[in-house]
Length: 103
Ligand code: HEM
Image (cartoon, rainbow, N blue to C red; front, side, top):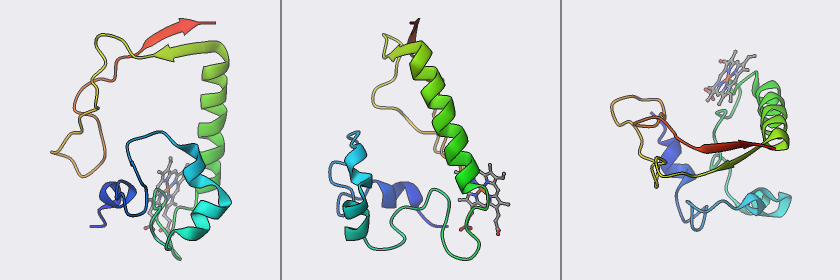
């Protein structure tokens, strides 16, 4: 098993790992990190064949959602999010509640 969540949250590679910081993925910052420190789609000869399609689809979905709705946390949102420790897949322990307003 490769501990991807731990690698992606290692402050050695990703300072203040729980902060949202899109600049982590600037070309220069990516170059400064060692290989195999960003593995959502695996790496090497058997990495995900659907990576480009998945990224494109996710970006279109997020763009359409934030174009039409405003999302914010509410009383029922669990902060910080808790993960389900009884599965090898990264899933939240309970539902993710958000407040959604149509724009
Ligand atoms: C967010 C969406 C996705 C994530 C996070 C994801 C992640 C992964 C990961 C981690 C692997 C293993 C890579 C490795 O062993 O190094 C993999 C393999 C694979 N994925 Fe995805 N995947 C996604 C979407 C897709 C889509 C949309 C398709 C097809 C249209 C797809 C098809 C495959 C296939 C066929 C493999 C096996 C590749 C091989 O063994 O040669 N994936 N994926």
